[in-house]
Amino acid sequence: MTVAVTPPRLVATCHHGLEAFLRLEPEWRALVERSRTTNPFLSWEWVSEWGRSFWGGNLVVVVVEMSSGPVAIAPFHEYEGLPAPGLRAPSLELMGPRRRRYRQMFELAEALVDPDDAVPALAMVVDRLCAEGRWSWLEVGAWGEGAGWWQEAIGVAEAKATAAVEGRRDVLIMDLGRTWEELRGQLRRNVKESIRRAYNAPARDGIRLVYSEHRGVAGLDPVLDDLFALHSARAGAGRGVAHPDYFSDPAVRGFVRRVAHRLAEADRLSLGIVEQDGRRVAVRFHMEMHGVLYLYHSGFDPELWRYSVATLATVEAIKAAIARGLRGVNFSLGVDQAKARWNVRSVPFERVQIVRGTAGARRVSALYSGVRHARQAGSGVARMAHLGH
Image (cartoon, rainbow, N blue to C red; front, side, top):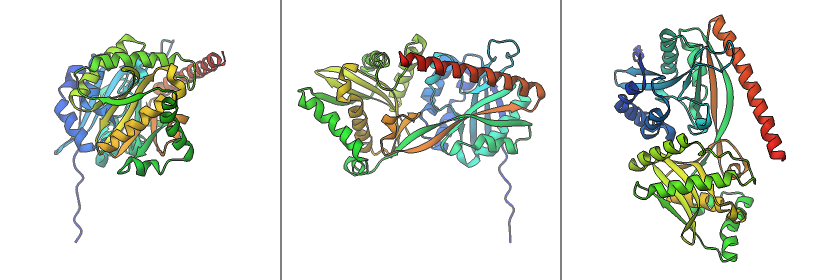
């Protein structure tokens, strides 16, 4: 005898403003555990501090629930378009804002969702927002198994909308073994040689580099000060892969300092430190989420470039993660040679634009996309010209 199973009933509600979002702390924390996400940017410590720093009242939050609790929470930041005639139509950015100098801070901006109910829950997010406001399009993101969920959700949503992938980048993940020796044996020869050089070269020149990790709130601010200074020094070195100074904006530094304290209190933060004669010469910001270490922004003294101090810091962070029983290391969003040389696998992160089915929304979205792509192309040319000099 076949028994029909009735799918669980999902209910979507909409909340406006920062204070309404902050009242969702119990639901958010419960869903973080339910989803078992390894995205550290979805910790309550991170996302609530991001909200306090950058959201204000320009916030629309959709919560999708069933009888057992929430299955999706999606905070959208309202954005009024580009400052050009005809492009003022409002859009909603998931975990926005993604513009201005702090757009690189929230690297993996996605909805918090239970994977078991992701597609119908995200479909309800779209339906609820279509019934709620006057926006022309949504800008959303998802990574890992979530890449593709929004496109599937549009297929089952009642509202008329279209979805298109605006961009894709990869996140590199290293699966950890039981010991460093086991993991090291799987590395390519050139990586092993880089590791040997990072330890042998300074020793040969009489330079003693010592690695440690700072955990906890006590003494945190001086380490963060050195992180900001070393990050700026690395950005201005004019060598290797070009990196902007992401901490140049005082608003960003203030946010990072506050969120670091909160992450430290929750035991989700460690700062990897390399010292020479008691002076910090490299600092990296690490976050931990459900057994995976995330290697966030860092900085080091360019005077020690030839000693591969960044490689030493990475190796020691991996060793520490293994010792703590973690199962993976996330090398963060984006691919470069320094990351790709490790024994890593690529996990996609997609940015998706969801456009309402009205003629006006489609027209404004197309104009907006054209202007944005032209500006990005111009920025790319300017960067290449700068590097050429």
